[in-house]
Length: 494
Image (cartoon, rainbow, N blue to C red):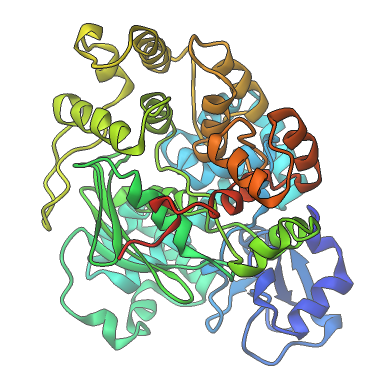
Protein backbone atom coordinates (compact mmCIF):
# COMPACT_ATOMS: atom_id res chain seq x y z
CA UNK A 1 0.00 0.00 0.00
CA UNK A 2 1.40 3.32 -0.99
CA UNK A 3 0.86 6.83 0.25
CA UNK A 4 -2.22 8.45 -1.33
CA UNK A 5 -4.21 5.22 -1.57
CA UNK A 6 -7.44 7.26 -1.74
CA UNK A 7 -6.43 8.19 -5.31
CA UNK A 8 -6.54 4.53 -6.41
CA UNK A 9 -10.26 4.53 -7.09
CA UNK A 10 -10.57 0.95 -8.34
CA UNK A 11 -8.79 -0.46 -5.31
CA UNK A 12 -10.87 1.63 -2.89
CA UNK A 13 -14.12 0.52 -4.53
CA UNK A 14 -13.09 -3.15 -4.20
CA UNK A 15 -12.22 -2.64 -0.52
CA UNK A 16 -15.61 -1.03 0.20
CA UNK A 17 -17.56 -3.68 -1.71
CA UNK A 18 -15.79 -6.45 0.22
CA UNK A 19 -16.08 -4.54 3.55
CA UNK A 20 -12.37 -5.08 4.12
CA UNK A 21 -11.52 -3.87 7.64
CA UNK A 22 -7.80 -3.84 6.83
CA UNK A 23 -8.35 -0.57 4.96
CA UNK A 24 -10.15 1.25 7.79
CA UNK A 25 -8.19 4.44 8.40
CA UNK A 26 -6.26 4.19 5.13
CA UNK A 27 -9.04 6.12 3.36
CA UNK A 28 -12.64 7.23 3.94
CA UNK A 29 -15.62 6.75 1.61
CA UNK A 30 -17.94 9.72 1.13
CA UNK A 31 -21.35 9.01 -0.44
CA UNK A 32 -22.60 11.77 -2.73
CA UNK A 33 -26.29 10.86 -2.43
CA UNK A 34 -26.48 10.71 1.39
CA UNK A 35 -23.67 13.19 2.22
CA UNK A 36 -22.33 10.66 4.74
CA UNK A 37 -18.79 9.32 5.04
CA UNK A 38 -17.85 5.83 6.18
CA UNK A 39 -14.93 3.51 6.90
CA UNK A 40 -14.16 0.80 4.33
CA UNK A 41 -15.76 -1.94 6.43
CA UNK A 42 -19.11 -0.16 6.99
CA UNK A 43 -21.78 -2.88 7.52
CA UNK A 44 -24.47 -1.18 5.43
CA UNK A 45 -25.10 -2.13 1.81
CA UNK A 46 -22.33 -0.48 -0.23
CA UNK A 47 -23.42 2.48 -2.37
CA UNK A 48 -23.13 2.42 -6.13
CA UNK A 49 -19.54 2.98 -7.22
CA UNK A 50 -20.49 6.13 -9.14
CA UNK A 51 -21.70 7.69 -5.87
CA UNK A 52 -18.43 7.06 -3.98
CA UNK A 53 -15.75 9.70 -3.44
CA UNK A 54 -12.61 8.90 -1.47
CA UNK A 55 -10.72 11.08 0.97
CA UNK A 56 -7.47 10.55 2.90
CA UNK A 57 -8.80 11.72 6.28
CA UNK A 58 -11.98 12.20 8.28
CA UNK A 59 -11.13 15.90 8.47
CA UNK A 60 -11.11 16.15 4.67
CA UNK A 61 -14.56 14.52 4.54
CA UNK A 62 -15.91 16.93 7.14
CA UNK A 63 -14.38 19.90 5.35
CA UNK A 64 -16.14 18.80 2.15
CA UNK A 65 -19.49 18.83 3.98
CA UNK A 66 -19.98 15.11 4.74
CA UNK A 67 -21.25 13.78 8.09
CA UNK A 68 -19.96 10.74 9.96
CA UNK A 69 -21.91 7.49 9.51
CA UNK A 70 -23.85 6.52 12.64
CA UNK A 71 -23.41 2.80 11.94
CA UNK A 72 -19.69 2.36 11.31
CA UNK A 73 -18.44 5.39 13.30
CA UNK A 74 -15.53 6.18 10.99
CA UNK A 75 -14.00 8.59 13.50
CA UNK A 76 -13.13 5.59 15.73
CA UNK A 77 -11.21 3.60 13.12
CA UNK A 78 -7.46 2.98 13.54
CA UNK A 79 -5.23 5.80 12.32
CA UNK A 80 -3.43 5.69 9.01
CA UNK A 81 -0.19 3.65 9.21
CA UNK A 82 1.43 6.28 6.99
CA UNK A 83 2.13 8.61 9.90
CA UNK A 84 4.07 5.94 11.79
CA UNK A 85 6.18 4.65 8.92
CA UNK A 86 7.46 7.98 7.63
CA UNK A 87 9.59 10.81 9.00
CA UNK A 88 8.79 13.55 6.47
CA UNK A 89 7.11 16.86 7.31
CA UNK A 90 3.50 15.65 6.88
CA UNK A 91 4.00 12.51 8.97
CA UNK A 92 5.71 14.43 11.77
CA UNK A 93 2.95 17.07 11.69
CA UNK A 94 0.25 14.39 11.93
CA UNK A 95 1.94 12.83 14.95
CA UNK A 96 2.13 16.22 16.67
CA UNK A 97 -1.52 17.03 15.90
CA UNK A 98 -2.50 13.67 17.41
CA UNK A 99 -0.50 14.68 20.49
CA UNK A 100 -2.65 17.81 20.86
CA UNK A 101 -0.07 20.43 19.88
CA UNK A 102 -2.48 22.52 17.77
CA UNK A 103 -5.05 22.67 20.58
CA UNK A 104 -2.39 23.79 23.08
CA UNK A 105 -0.09 25.98 20.98
CA UNK A 106 -2.00 26.73 17.77
CA UNK A 107 -0.71 26.36 14.22
CA UNK A 108 2.28 28.66 14.92
CA UNK A 109 3.30 26.32 17.75
CA UNK A 110 3.02 23.33 15.44
CA UNK A 111 5.14 25.03 12.79
CA UNK A 112 7.76 26.05 15.35
CA UNK A 113 8.12 22.46 16.58
CA UNK A 114 8.66 21.37 12.97
CA UNK A 115 11.00 24.29 12.12
CA UNK A 116 8.90 25.23 9.08
CA UNK A 117 6.70 28.24 8.33
CA UNK A 118 2.97 27.95 9.02
CA UNK A 119 2.32 28.41 5.31
CA UNK A 120 4.57 25.48 4.37
CA UNK A 121 2.96 23.19 6.95
CA UNK A 122 -0.57 24.13 5.87
CA UNK A 123 0.23 23.75 2.16
CA UNK A 124 1.76 20.29 2.54
CA UNK A 125 -1.02 18.99 4.80
CA UNK A 126 -3.69 20.25 2.40
CA UNK A 127 -1.93 18.63 -0.55
CA UNK A 128 -1.58 15.22 1.07
CA UNK A 129 -4.25 14.88 3.75
CA UNK A 130 -6.91 17.10 2.21
CA UNK A 131 -7.20 19.31 5.29
CA UNK A 132 -5.11 21.87 7.12
CA UNK A 133 -3.95 21.63 10.75
CA UNK A 134 -6.98 23.48 12.14
CA UNK A 135 -9.43 21.15 10.36
CA UNK A 136 -7.47 18.08 11.49
CA UNK A 137 -7.45 19.31 15.08
CA UNK A 138 -11.19 20.08 14.83
CA UNK A 139 -11.93 16.52 13.67
CA UNK A 140 -9.92 15.20 16.59
CA UNK A 141 -11.83 17.42 19.03
CA UNK A 142 -15.10 16.12 17.60
CA UNK A 143 -13.98 12.54 18.18
CA UNK A 144 -12.95 13.37 21.76
CA UNK A 145 -16.29 15.09 22.34
CA UNK A 146 -18.22 12.04 21.17
CA UNK A 147 -16.15 9.82 23.46
CA UNK A 148 -16.81 12.05 26.47
CA UNK A 149 -20.50 12.38 25.64
CA UNK A 150 -20.93 8.62 25.44
CA UNK A 151 -18.72 7.53 28.35
CA UNK A 152 -19.10 10.23 31.03
CA UNK A 153 -21.95 11.98 32.87
CA UNK A 154 -20.17 15.35 32.54
CA UNK A 155 -22.38 18.39 31.97
CA UNK A 156 -22.10 19.54 28.37
CA UNK A 157 -20.46 22.86 29.24
CA UNK A 158 -17.68 21.14 31.19
CA UNK A 159 -17.37 18.46 28.53
CA UNK A 160 -16.95 21.01 25.73
CA UNK A 161 -13.89 22.58 27.32
CA UNK A 162 -12.46 19.16 28.25
CA UNK A 163 -12.67 18.17 24.57
CA UNK A 164 -10.67 21.27 23.61
CA UNK A 165 -13.40 23.60 22.33
CA UNK A 166 -13.07 27.30 23.08
CA UNK A 167 -16.83 27.91 23.41
CA UNK A 168 -20.09 26.03 23.97
CA UNK A 169 -21.46 27.37 20.69
CA UNK A 170 -18.49 26.01 18.69
CA UNK A 171 -18.86 22.67 20.46
CA UNK A 172 -22.58 22.44 19.65
CA UNK A 173 -22.11 23.49 16.02
CA UNK A 174 -19.22 21.07 15.44
CA UNK A 175 -21.03 18.06 16.94
CA UNK A 176 -24.12 18.80 14.83
CA UNK A 177 -22.07 19.23 11.65
CA UNK A 178 -19.96 16.10 12.12
CA UNK A 179 -22.53 13.68 13.55
CA UNK A 180 -25.86 15.18 12.40
CA UNK A 181 -27.02 15.03 16.03
CA UNK A 182 -26.98 17.52 18.87
CA UNK A 183 -24.78 16.65 21.86
CA UNK A 184 -27.90 15.78 23.89
CA UNK A 185 -29.22 13.49 21.11
CA UNK A 186 -25.81 11.84 20.86
CA UNK A 187 -25.82 11.10 24.58
CA UNK A 188 -29.33 9.68 24.30
CA UNK A 189 -28.12 7.10 21.75
CA UNK A 190 -25.37 5.64 23.94
CA UNK A 191 -25.70 1.97 24.96
CA UNK A 192 -27.42 1.21 28.26
CA UNK A 193 -24.20 -0.25 29.69
CA UNK A 194 -22.64 3.21 29.37
CA UNK A 195 -25.23 4.79 31.68
CA UNK A 196 -23.99 2.99 34.78
CA UNK A 197 -22.46 5.01 37.64
CA UNK A 198 -19.11 6.35 36.56
CA UNK A 199 -16.20 7.53 38.66
CA UNK A 200 -15.21 11.15 37.98
CA UNK A 201 -12.01 11.38 35.95
CA UNK A 202 -12.13 7.68 34.99
CA UNK A 203 -12.95 6.72 31.40
CA UNK A 204 -13.30 3.26 29.90
CA UNK A 205 -12.91 2.87 26.15
CA UNK A 206 -11.78 0.52 23.41
CA UNK A 207 -8.67 1.12 21.32
CA UNK A 208 -9.14 -0.38 17.83
CA UNK A 209 -6.36 -1.98 15.81
CA UNK A 210 -5.83 -3.83 12.54
CA UNK A 211 -5.78 -7.60 12.97
CA UNK A 212 -3.84 -9.67 13.61
CA UNK A 213 -2.24 -8.44 16.83
CA UNK A 214 0.02 -10.74 18.83
CA UNK A 215 0.02 -9.44 22.43
CA UNK A 216 2.79 -11.73 23.70
CA UNK A 217 5.92 -9.70 23.00
CA UNK A 218 4.05 -6.38 23.17
CA UNK A 219 2.74 -6.71 26.72
CA UNK A 220 5.48 -9.17 27.69
CA UNK A 221 8.16 -6.58 26.96
CA UNK A 222 6.36 -3.78 28.79
CA UNK A 223 5.67 -5.97 31.84
CA UNK A 224 9.12 -7.59 32.03
CA UNK A 225 10.89 -4.22 31.95
CA UNK A 226 8.33 -2.36 34.12
CA UNK A 227 9.83 0.14 36.56
CA UNK A 228 8.32 -0.33 40.05
CA UNK A 229 6.19 2.62 41.06
CA UNK A 230 5.70 3.77 37.45
CA UNK A 231 4.51 0.53 35.80
CA UNK A 232 3.02 -2.79 36.81
CA UNK A 233 1.19 -5.84 35.47
CA UNK A 234 -1.99 -6.47 37.46
CA UNK A 235 -5.02 -8.68 36.82
CA UNK A 236 -4.24 -9.11 33.14
CA UNK A 237 -3.57 -5.42 32.52
CA UNK A 238 -0.47 -3.33 31.99
CA UNK A 239 -0.76 -0.21 34.14
CA UNK A 240 1.44 2.87 34.14
CA UNK A 241 1.50 6.52 35.15
CA UNK A 242 1.41 9.24 32.50
CA UNK A 243 2.91 12.73 32.59
CA UNK A 244 0.50 14.85 30.53
CA UNK A 245 0.31 18.52 29.45
CA UNK A 246 -2.34 19.56 31.99
CA UNK A 247 -1.75 17.04 34.76
CA UNK A 248 -1.10 13.34 35.21
CA UNK A 249 -2.92 10.11 34.56
CA UNK A 250 -2.90 6.35 34.95
CA UNK A 251 -3.57 4.03 32.03
CA UNK A 252 -4.64 0.40 32.39
CA UNK A 253 -4.42 -1.54 29.10
CA UNK A 254 -5.78 -5.05 28.64
CA UNK A 255 -5.45 -7.07 25.41
CA UNK A 256 -8.72 -8.49 24.00
CA UNK A 257 -9.54 -10.39 20.83
CA UNK A 258 -10.53 -7.39 18.69
CA UNK A 259 -9.46 -4.35 20.71
CA UNK A 260 -7.37 -3.11 23.61
CA UNK A 261 -9.48 -2.33 26.66
CA UNK A 262 -8.31 1.01 28.04
CA UNK A 263 -9.15 2.55 31.39
CA UNK A 264 -7.83 6.06 31.92
CA UNK A 265 -7.75 7.91 35.23
CA UNK A 266 -7.01 11.58 34.52
CA UNK A 267 -6.45 14.52 36.85
CA UNK A 268 -7.58 16.85 34.01
CA UNK A 269 -9.93 15.65 31.27
CA UNK A 270 -8.34 18.04 28.78
CA UNK A 271 -5.55 15.43 28.57
CA UNK A 272 -7.85 12.73 27.17
CA UNK A 273 -6.84 13.09 23.52
CA UNK A 274 -3.14 13.12 24.35
CA UNK A 275 -3.45 10.13 26.70
CA UNK A 276 -5.23 8.07 24.03
CA UNK A 277 -2.69 9.06 21.39
CA UNK A 278 0.25 8.09 23.59
CA UNK A 279 -1.27 4.75 24.58
CA UNK A 280 -1.95 3.92 20.93
CA UNK A 281 1.58 4.89 20.02
CA UNK A 282 3.09 2.84 22.85
CA UNK A 283 1.19 -0.25 21.69
CA UNK A 284 1.85 0.45 17.97
CA UNK A 285 -1.88 0.13 17.25
CA UNK A 286 -1.87 1.99 13.93
CA UNK A 287 0.51 -0.50 12.29
CA UNK A 288 -0.55 -2.46 9.20
CA UNK A 289 0.44 -6.03 10.21
CA UNK A 290 -0.62 -7.59 6.91
CA UNK A 291 1.72 -5.40 4.86
CA UNK A 292 4.54 -5.84 7.37
CA UNK A 293 4.25 -9.61 7.67
CA UNK A 294 3.87 -10.10 3.92
CA UNK A 295 7.16 -8.29 3.38
CA UNK A 296 9.00 -10.30 6.06
CA UNK A 297 7.62 -13.59 4.72
CA UNK A 298 9.57 -13.05 1.50
CA UNK A 299 12.65 -14.20 3.44
CA UNK A 300 12.34 -18.00 3.68
CA UNK A 301 14.22 -18.06 6.99
CA UNK A 302 11.92 -15.47 8.60
CA UNK A 303 8.68 -16.83 7.12
CA UNK A 304 8.23 -19.67 9.67
CA UNK A 305 8.57 -17.20 12.57
CA UNK A 306 5.94 -14.91 11.04
CA UNK A 307 3.57 -17.79 10.25
CA UNK A 308 3.89 -19.15 13.79
CA UNK A 309 2.79 -15.93 15.51
CA UNK A 310 1.79 -13.16 13.04
CA UNK A 311 0.96 -9.61 14.00
CA UNK A 312 3.84 -8.75 16.30
CA UNK A 313 4.03 -5.06 17.19
CA UNK A 314 6.96 -2.96 18.37
CA UNK A 315 6.57 -2.11 22.09
CA UNK A 316 7.14 1.64 22.26
CA UNK A 317 6.81 4.31 24.95
CA UNK A 318 4.59 7.14 26.18
CA UNK A 319 7.60 9.38 26.88
CA UNK A 320 10.59 9.56 24.55
CA UNK A 321 12.94 11.24 27.05
CA UNK A 322 12.05 8.68 29.72
CA UNK A 323 12.88 5.83 27.38
CA UNK A 324 16.24 7.35 26.42
CA UNK A 325 17.19 7.58 30.11
CA UNK A 326 16.12 3.97 30.67
CA UNK A 327 18.09 2.83 27.61
CA UNK A 328 21.26 4.26 29.17
CA UNK A 329 20.44 2.64 32.52
CA UNK A 330 20.10 -0.67 30.67
CA UNK A 331 23.48 -0.55 28.94
CA UNK A 332 25.44 -3.76 29.55
CA UNK A 333 23.31 -4.84 32.54
CA UNK A 334 20.45 -7.31 33.01
CA UNK A 335 16.78 -6.34 32.77
CA UNK A 336 16.47 -6.73 36.56
CA UNK A 337 19.44 -4.45 37.21
CA UNK A 338 18.09 -1.79 34.85
CA UNK A 339 14.73 -1.87 36.67
CA UNK A 340 16.49 -1.49 40.01
CA UNK A 341 18.50 1.54 38.82
CA UNK A 342 15.35 3.17 37.41
CA UNK A 343 13.29 2.43 40.54
CA UNK A 344 15.87 4.22 42.72
CA UNK A 345 15.67 7.31 40.52
CA UNK A 346 11.87 7.19 40.58
CA UNK A 347 11.72 7.01 44.38
CA UNK A 348 14.26 9.80 44.86
CA UNK A 349 13.35 12.19 42.05
CA UNK A 350 9.93 11.25 40.60
CA UNK A 351 6.76 13.22 41.33
CA UNK A 352 4.43 11.27 43.67
CA UNK A 353 0.89 10.46 42.48
CA UNK A 354 -2.16 8.88 44.07
CA UNK A 355 -3.26 5.54 42.63
CA UNK A 356 -6.79 4.52 43.72
CA UNK A 357 -5.85 0.88 43.15
CA UNK A 358 -2.45 1.13 44.84
CA UNK A 359 0.74 -0.14 43.25
CA UNK A 360 1.71 2.94 41.26
CA UNK A 361 3.35 5.73 43.23
CA UNK A 362 5.25 8.12 40.97
CA UNK A 363 5.69 9.75 37.60
CA UNK A 364 9.06 9.04 36.02
CA UNK A 365 11.47 11.91 36.83
CA UNK A 366 11.78 14.75 34.33
CA UNK A 367 15.12 15.44 32.62
CA UNK A 368 15.29 18.67 34.64
CA UNK A 369 15.02 16.77 37.93
CA UNK A 370 17.63 14.22 36.83
CA UNK A 371 20.01 16.94 35.60
CA UNK A 372 19.96 18.47 39.09
CA UNK A 373 20.97 15.30 40.96
CA UNK A 374 24.45 14.68 42.36
CA UNK A 375 26.31 12.45 39.84
CA UNK A 376 28.20 10.79 42.70
CA UNK A 377 24.89 9.38 43.96
CA UNK A 378 24.55 7.22 40.84
CA UNK A 379 25.53 3.60 41.48
CA UNK A 380 27.06 2.97 38.08
CA UNK A 381 30.52 2.96 36.44
CA UNK A 382 32.05 6.40 35.86
CA UNK A 383 31.85 6.17 32.05
CA UNK A 384 28.14 5.35 32.15
CA UNK A 385 27.64 8.10 34.71
CA UNK A 386 29.10 10.54 32.18
CA UNK A 387 26.77 9.15 29.49
CA UNK A 388 23.77 9.55 31.81
CA UNK A 389 24.57 13.08 32.98
CA UNK A 390 25.33 14.30 29.45
CA UNK A 391 22.04 12.90 28.14
CA UNK A 392 19.81 14.36 30.87
CA UNK A 393 21.59 17.73 30.71
CA UNK A 394 21.03 17.99 26.96
CA UNK A 395 17.40 16.89 27.30
CA UNK A 396 16.85 19.43 30.08
CA UNK A 397 18.39 22.41 28.28
CA UNK A 398 16.83 21.57 24.90
CA UNK A 399 20.10 20.82 23.10
CA UNK A 400 18.63 17.38 22.38
CA UNK A 401 14.90 17.01 21.80
CA UNK A 402 13.09 13.70 21.52
CA UNK A 403 9.44 13.79 20.51
CA UNK A 404 6.81 12.72 17.97
CA UNK A 405 8.19 15.28 15.52
CA UNK A 406 11.81 14.07 15.69
CA UNK A 407 13.55 13.54 12.37
CA UNK A 408 14.79 9.96 12.71
CA UNK A 409 18.15 10.16 10.86
CA UNK A 410 19.05 13.54 12.37
CA UNK A 411 18.17 12.44 15.90
CA UNK A 412 20.07 9.17 15.54
CA UNK A 413 23.17 11.14 14.48
CA UNK A 414 22.74 13.48 17.46
CA UNK A 415 22.52 10.50 19.82
CA UNK A 416 25.62 8.88 18.35
CA UNK A 417 27.58 12.09 19.04
CA UNK A 418 26.98 11.73 22.79
CA UNK A 419 29.65 10.03 24.92
CA UNK A 420 28.88 6.36 25.56
CA UNK A 421 26.26 6.15 22.80
CA UNK A 422 26.95 3.35 20.34
CA UNK A 423 24.75 1.89 17.58
CA UNK A 424 22.74 -0.33 19.98
CA UNK A 425 21.64 2.53 22.26
CA UNK A 426 20.89 4.90 19.38
CA UNK A 427 18.95 2.25 17.46
CA UNK A 428 16.88 1.00 20.41
CA UNK A 429 15.85 4.63 21.10
CA UNK A 430 15.06 5.11 17.39
CA UNK A 431 12.96 1.92 17.39
CA UNK A 432 11.08 2.15 20.67
CA UNK A 433 11.03 5.88 21.50
CA UNK A 434 10.99 7.62 18.13
CA UNK A 435 8.97 4.90 16.38
CA UNK A 436 11.27 4.31 13.40
CA UNK A 437 9.86 1.07 11.86
CA UNK A 438 13.17 0.37 10.11
CA UNK A 439 15.52 0.68 13.11
CA UNK A 440 17.61 -2.47 13.39
CA UNK A 441 19.75 -3.76 16.27
CA UNK A 442 22.39 -5.66 14.32
CA UNK A 443 24.81 -5.60 17.28
CA UNK A 444 22.28 -6.95 19.83
CA UNK A 445 23.42 -10.23 21.35
CA UNK A 446 19.94 -11.75 21.28
CA UNK A 447 19.50 -10.85 17.61
CA UNK A 448 22.88 -12.30 16.67
CA UNK A 449 22.15 -15.50 18.58
CA UNK A 450 18.75 -15.87 16.90
CA UNK A 451 20.30 -15.20 13.49
CA UNK A 452 22.89 -17.91 14.02
CA UNK A 453 20.24 -20.46 15.07
CA UNK A 454 18.15 -19.66 11.98
CA UNK A 455 21.06 -19.86 9.57
CA UNK A 456 21.19 -16.11 8.98
CA UNK A 457 24.53 -14.25 9.02
CA UNK A 458 25.44 -13.49 12.63
CA UNK A 459 28.08 -10.77 12.25
CA UNK A 460 26.59 -7.23 12.39
CA UNK A 461 27.81 -6.22 8.92
CA UNK A 462 26.65 -9.40 7.17
CA UNK A 463 23.33 -9.43 9.04
CA UNK A 464 22.69 -5.79 8.14
CA UNK A 465 23.31 -6.60 4.49
CA UNK A 466 20.86 -9.53 4.62
CA UNK A 467 18.29 -7.41 6.46
CA UNK A 468 18.14 -4.93 3.56
CA UNK A 469 15.44 -7.18 2.09
CA UNK A 470 13.29 -6.62 5.20
CA UNK A 471 13.16 -2.84 4.80
CA UNK A 472 11.27 -0.74 5.75
CA UNK A 473 10.16 -3.12 8.53
CA UNK A 474 13.42 -4.15 10.22
CA UNK A 475 12.13 -3.10 13.66
CA UNK A 476 9.41 -5.74 13.27
CA UNK A 477 11.93 -8.33 12.09
CA UNK A 478 13.76 -7.58 15.34
CA UNK A 479 10.64 -8.58 17.30
CA UNK A 480 10.36 -11.89 15.44
CA UNK A 481 14.05 -12.64 16.00
CA UNK A 482 13.87 -11.76 19.69
CA UNK A 483 10.86 -14.06 20.03
CA UNK A 484 13.01 -17.15 19.39
CA UNK A 485 14.45 -16.72 22.91
CA UNK A 486 12.87 -17.80 26.19
CA UNK A 487 13.32 -14.38 27.84
CA UNK A 488 10.21 -13.12 29.74
CA UNK A 489 9.89 -10.16 27.33
CA UNK A 490 8.46 -12.60 24.78
CA UNK A 491 5.58 -13.94 26.84
CA UNK A 492 2.29 -12.51 28.02
CA UNK A 493 2.52 -12.49 31.83
CA UNK A 494 0.41 -15.04 33.68
